[in-house]
Length: 277
Image 1 (tube, rainbow, N blue to C red):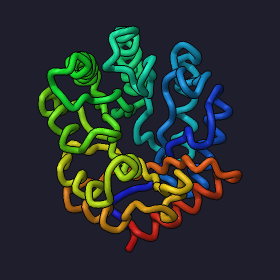
Image 2: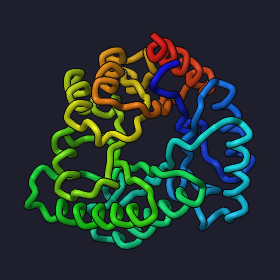
Image 3: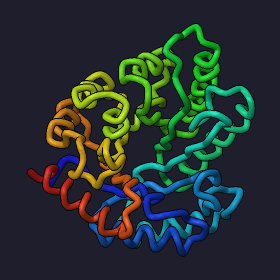
């Protein structure tokens, strides 16, 4: 058996406005063969979202936990992606910042309530210059969220994006809170960097990586099922094993294929072959 597991980022199957929709998505993931799922947890982009306390109840969330257990699924994490006026995440934007901080903290509370210990999100754009005002805003907001995570036992995993792995690593080191980690997405790094950078980033971030998204990248179609793009999967998985990562590869299918279930299934089959090799 592989030392790495396969899961599914459930929003690839659409929104979850009620328990029934979330149950259907979890059933699909289990049928494909996934051992874990990562649901959306904030009522923002995929709205309405049943796991957000503004939409669903504690009883709804207990029912979801029960359904997952009946399917043999665990929660690898939850996605608490917010948006600012200008950036995806907005934790470096002052306007509306306190609401986004508190919303993320609430997502941590819900994750803990459901037995999870990871939420993932793009925080925003990390300025290259530390003297930039937005850098200090991001430092302040992420530090506050990480402190709350330490209090409730939930990691805040920043998703790799447009900044370099080194810049992200330095930012996390500056905050210095062990409850602040990384959700590694090789597709994002390949899209904004290079194949070599995708592999090097694993080594740079090392033990900070606590969760990963399995997604591929094709610069011509701007999308790809895993194994059908440019992500160097064999070298990437090998690098993860070298740093001691033993967590999930959560399939995040952004292809927009007419048959998303079939596309996720192809990703699963491809990745299973690599992990079991």
